[in-house]
Amino acid sequence: MAMPGNPLTDPNWANEVTDQITEIVGTVRDKTTDKAIVAVRAIVFGLLALFLSIALVGLLLIMLTRALQSLLNLMMGWDTAVYVSYFIVGGLLALVGVFAMSKRSSAS
Image (cartoon, rainbow, N blue to C red; front, side):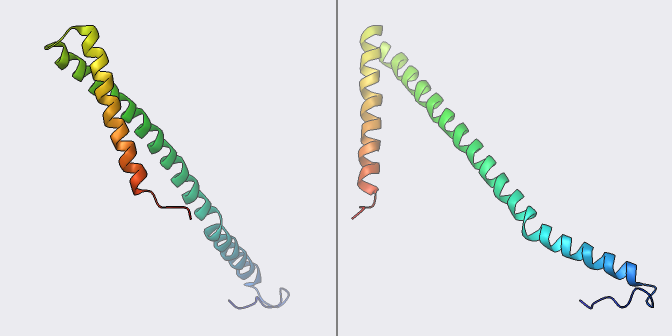
């Protein structure tokens, strides 16, 4: 990047200075604003995916419990089927928790 010449003797001085300013502003924008936009988009879409995943897991657990209740209702009364389904789903979630705790890394 060459420095512009003397404004009194160089007829292209204004164009050269304008081009340099535009280039500097573009470089600053590329190094700051564009990276910030990418980071903010990643945060927004990541949070959106997290919230949708939490809602989906909740809905799937509700559907599993209701399906299990309907299946157990074929063999026992409705009240008993509800309690048994809660114990089964709770037991499965407890097993998932025990498995997850066994895979965690130790802090010490």
